[in-house]
Amino acid sequence: MIARSGLLDAVFPEASSALCAPTLNAFLARGQAVWRPVRARLSNLLAVGNRELHDAGIAERALVERSSVRMVLPIAVGDYVDFYSSREHATNLGKMLRPEGEALLPNWRYLPIGYHGRANSVVASGTPITRPRGQFKIPERTEPIFAPTRMLDFELEIAFVTGDGPSLGAPISVERAREHIFGIALLNDWSARDIQAWEYQPLGPFLSKSFATSLSPWIVPLDALEPFRVEGPTQEPPPLPHLATSDSQNYDVALAVEFSSATMRRAAATPQTIARTNSRGLYWSMAQQLTHLTSNGAGIKAGDLCASGTISGSEPGTFGSLIELTWRGTRPLELPDGSSRTFLADGDAVTLRGWCDRPGAVHIGLGEVGGTVLPAPH
Ligand code: CA
Picture 1 (cartoon, rainbow, N blue to C red):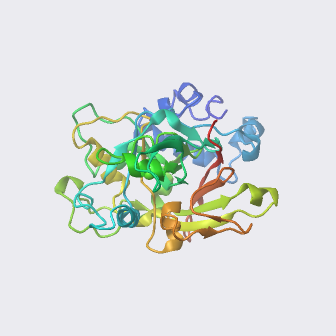
Picture 2 (picture 1 turned 135 degrees about the vertical axis):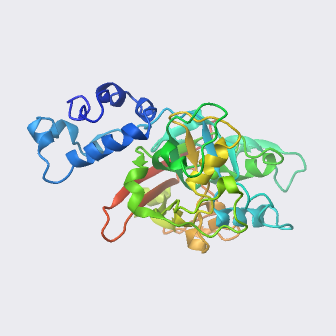
Picture 3 (picture 1 turned 180 degrees about the vertical axis):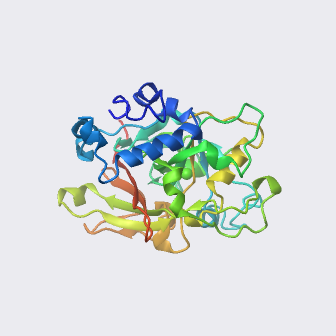
């Protein structure tokens, strides 16, 4: 509505064609030289006291209640990569999956580990998640079975969305990586742990992750997060030169996981906050992730999506997945309805929330990403 009105034309003459499309991809392809002035202009138009929307007669149509709008995916997802950047999460998983060995594999401190995920099963917040079937081992049998997963989990993550990169073969330096990142959103990488445990060696996760990934409905531009840019943890050993940076590259984003069972919702019980954490402690920054991704010359396109990996802190209440919160099912989570959980049951709903707050800075809301588990089809 604002783009159509011509109020952005002074900073971006093609606003009405690039911003009235069903997705942001065409806008993302214009790069930082367009993102910055458009954001600054929008911020100015929405500032308290600015009457331009009213004077143009579009205030009522341009500003609508969030609850009255059906949210959709903000981008057509191009390539989707999921990293594994939280040292605490990688250590926890290592301890559970390889109790006999070192929790962190030797490569972990040298490069941001990641895998290519499935772009076309990235879904908008609110989309129901059907319990997947898959192949996994159970203690009673030597052969694997094919059945609905018994260990359905969520993963609390943030994800960044890119603009276009340089041509194929041209890596993006860590100093310039942020220029190619438009902004961030919340992401839930739904995971079937039993399927994952059986399939993940030697090539990494496949069907245990690809059935659904939920994305929050708007992307917060990196420029809006500038007041919340902070130094990350000390990296030891120091990264190789192409991944080394002296700049602050982490973001102080508060994160929370809310849970409600079908029984709790029927009783109108308040959802239970089962974890609180923050992305500022991520070992590998988004800039390092993007630099690593393109360091072999692989290109990026507007609308590519890169997720952080599960974000966990060092205390149990800061873990970003059920497998960690319940320590692989050995410490069940007690719920207010009297039941307990090791992994997700049908009817369970998980909502991830994110926000940035700091004295003197404007509150930034990342919104939420939610989903409810449906039973596996017969
Ligand atoms: Ca993940």
